[in-house]
Amino acid sequence: MSNSFAQSYKATLKQSEVPSIYRHYQEEFTFDSTRNPNAWLKTEKGLQVSFVSTDQSYFRTEVPEIKNKTNSIELVGWKGERLSTNILVWARDTVQQINFTTGEFRNAAGNKLNNDAISLKLVRYVISDYPYSSDTVDCGPSPYKQAFLMPDRLENIERFDVPAKSVRSVWVAVDIPAGATQGIYTGNIFVHTGTDSIKLTLSVKVQDEVLPKPHDWKHRLDLWQNPWAVSWYNNIEPWSEEHLVLLKQHLKIYADAGGKFITTYAVHSPWADNSYLAEGGMIEWVKQKNGNWKFNYKIFDQYVQLCLDLGIDDAITIYTPVPWETRFRYLNEANGKYLYEKWAPSSDTFSLHWNVFLTDLKSHLQKKGWLEKSYLGINENPLQQTLDAIKMIRKHSADWKITYAGHWHNELKELLNDYCLYVDLATSVENVKERSAKGFTTTWYVACTPAHPNNFVFSPPVEGRWMGWYTTAHGYGGFLRWAYDAWSADPLRDARHFVFPAGDCFMMYPGGNSSVRFEKMREGIVDFEKIRILREQTKTLANKDIKALMSKLDSHLKVFLTEKDFDPAKITADVEKGRSLLNEISEKIASTKTSVQ
Image 1 (cartoon, helix red, strand yellow):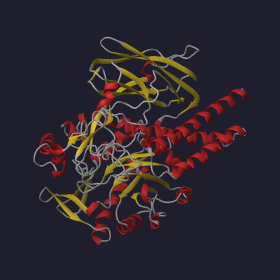
Image 2 (image 1 turned 180 degrees about the vertical axis):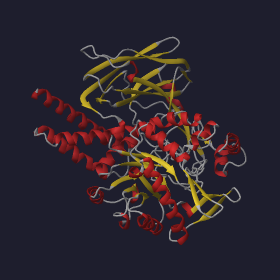
Image 3 (image 1 turned 90 degrees about the horizontal axis):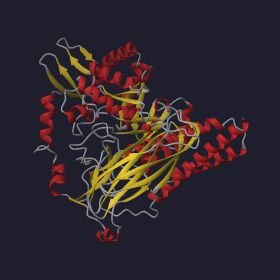
Image 4 (image 1 turned 30 degrees about the vertical axis):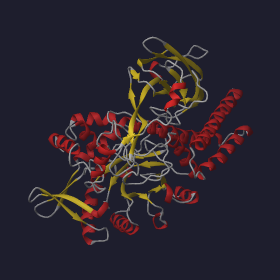
């Protein structure tokens, strides 16, 4: 895409070519109003401040319901772990020029955390098409005739104002250095206004366990990427040096959450143009004048190598032998035009063309040393189409690995190297164990449904962390989501899409800005890793107390398999109980090591 094309595309979206449902959002929707305006009259004067949990959301115009307002908190974690809390600020009258400073964090022995271990980000509000924790969600237009503001986008801050009768949240992240000494580190965070300062006390209890670097996590995180979105949003030439620099910044956060899969596209727009910017083909199919095929891997190679350099290096998914509507695009060398044809997986035409392509692709991947980590990806296609495609692929070469995202089918369980199951139409824990014993991997996903659990901007944040516990309980190897960055027209402010629920299409914001949803999902992945590590450590320990605690943890994990109503208070309590058990087991192991020494 040229720079001029990108500019014209964005201009078009802002005018008459915007899908009609999106124009309806822009022109007719009104914002949600405060539920209880009189509650502000009972609020104390001046800036109000408290530490609060990151497991729930706090709304811009609602007096926060906090049972125990507090200026101090203790977080507990391993060396190498990221911990989080929220600082909530709210005021009955306008308070301007609010800024934050942090002091040193030291333990009793005088050791201190690095200055960059503590970071603060403002939680920005974005527009949603569903209310908080909505129980009814579907693809297509929202039934609500109003818009809702949800706290989600994390942004660097210097200072900000709190208008009268409003709330702001500041996300505090503590990245415990892997080389930190165990102990309790205590320090202060100061909230400054033009006339006053409020002191908060944060304690960080560092346990004597080490979390591996994200690259070495075993959890298989697969967030589908659309790198063209970065060039489109920034009005720059795709695959230019500037684009590649921005992609590195953009993908670093995915790598830092243990991202394992590189999303690539062997065909143009595999999902039938269902987003604001279609996923382009990374491998150009060219039909030469003599009728033979040739293939250009330049973009594919650039993107894969960029991801590998960032440490996203476990798997390369190549989409897809079965694009939606079985539509394929190629460049006709005779007239220089792109042509579209439909090749059904059961047809001789499909077999003819894809055998040629797979032979060339296999040779290319072998030369690059990438074949072993490459998967041919199929997504949510009808069973017979999927079986037809797999039959052709297996006939071509037994070396191919295949991944499929969709419903559980017994016919596929022995055919797929990697099977990603939709949460509401998945399979039993026993089937997952059986696949694992055969060396296959099995993961799970959510999409524009179900309402719970999910990663929408209106989802209770705790659901993101809950997912890590469900992954462990069900025996899955990881989690998939479409998408990392399929941005809507104005993603920094408006998370709504003309087809999908707000936030369904992206978890990362432009400019390399993370989200509440992404960070909570990352916390759940860390819990998955900690459970895995503790299980490995305690296999050979004879300590009865530790074995009893591990048995208690295993029993508690069964709770996550029976969750139905997804009451936020209930699932928060379940996650908190699980975390408390992890902390207790970690402490018990540390004390055992000390007594042995």
